[in-house]
Amino acid sequence: MPEFIGGLPVHPLLVHFTVVLIVIAVVGSVLTAVWPAVRRRYGWLAVGASAIGTLLVPFTTTSGANLAARYPNNPAIEKHEALGDLMIWWAAGLTVAVGALMVVHTMAARRVTTKVAVGSGGAEDVRETEPAKAPVLVVIVLAVITVGVAVGAGIHVYRVGDAGARAVWEGVENLPVQNGG
Image (cartoon, rainbow, N blue to C red; front, top):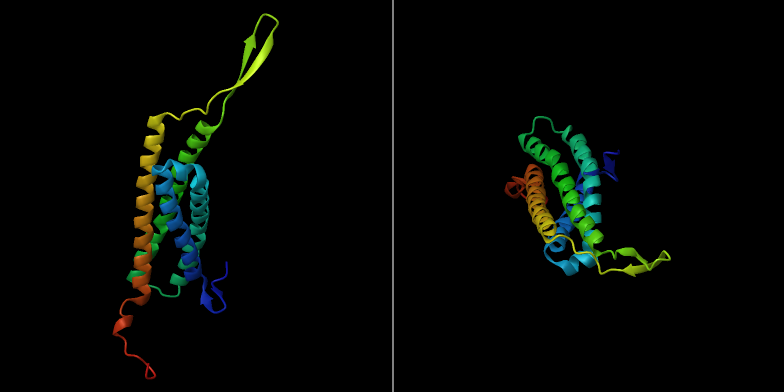
């Protein structure tokens, strides 16, 4: 993976893309968990955003490690790196939670076709039943898990970003303006 594109480090470019997707996934997952109309229309988009965000996390952390190697023994960067290394677990957990919720929802929403034997001649009558109702308890448990993991992922992505911003920008406001600013 290249470390720089057009003279800019790849890490902040990937970070912004990853963070936007994870935040969209967090908001989408919470809405999917608590609002059935959103679940029906947009739930799979939340799963997609979460999955793509999860896939980007290793690229983001690898590019960050490459950049951090240029600044050895920096405690602020080390803290940012340590937090960043944990992001994969939150992102993957969110993908699994909202994905499980959507699988249960999709399975429950499908119409079930049954064949019923009619008469003694062995003729079959095909009937479509109403959509299966997901067990309420399963949906509630998955929704609570999804909201919990989404909140945790949102908090963690904030913590990682805050540590990274502090590593880069802390103290800049105290520097004198150069060239007449």
